[in-house]
Image 1 (cartoon, rainbow, N blue to C red):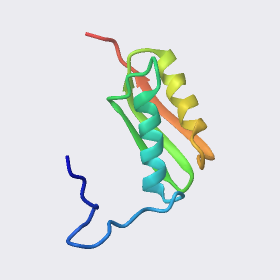
Image 2: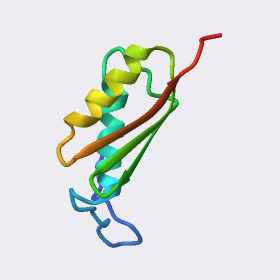
Image 3: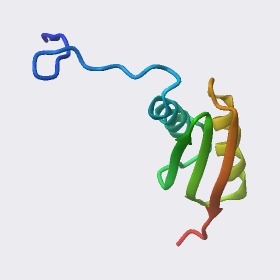
Length: 90
């Protein structure tokens, strides 16, 4: 297997600085995806500055609180606005 250096039209890809909102969204979304006991497939993450807005649907109230707690653990997050709702399965 051969690994090539990442390029975009021959140039190095642009890296987002750690405090960029898109990078913060990526880190929060990744943590939600790997949090045990949380199905975050229908959860959206939006960053405005260092404030995170969580929206979407999960199956239980426990998942709502797990998502908020997980988002608060990400470095750079100052506030989490949780608008996740529960929806009955089926």
